[in-house]
Length: 130
Image 1 (tube, rainbow, N blue to C red):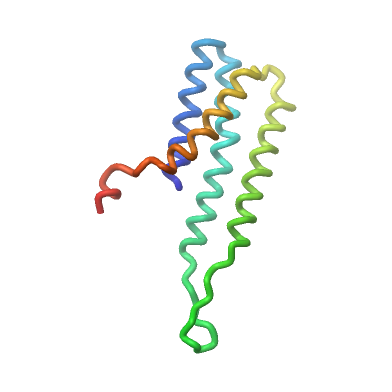
Image 2: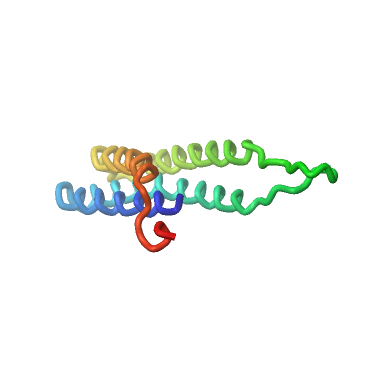
């Protein structure tokens, strides 16, 4: 999951560079801030999933069966991610006076649309071969 966040951060940076070339400094800042507002909550969610992955099943009352983790922490993490993303974007729209809306919208779209592609793409490198 952290690989997805790295891809999202790279896409945010690429969109910001393209926005700088086409729209100037304010467009680049708008695109970068919007990309970070989408990628950073995903990073926190990935951290939540990593911490939940360390959870080990505990035997239940000596019966030999184990309890599985609840889906509630995953759902709560997803809700927190959505609320944080919307809050950061609202804060950006409300607090940044020179926002360039086309750059912001393209950055949000690119960062959020690259997530399923990064999830579907097979990992490469040394860890993937093991």
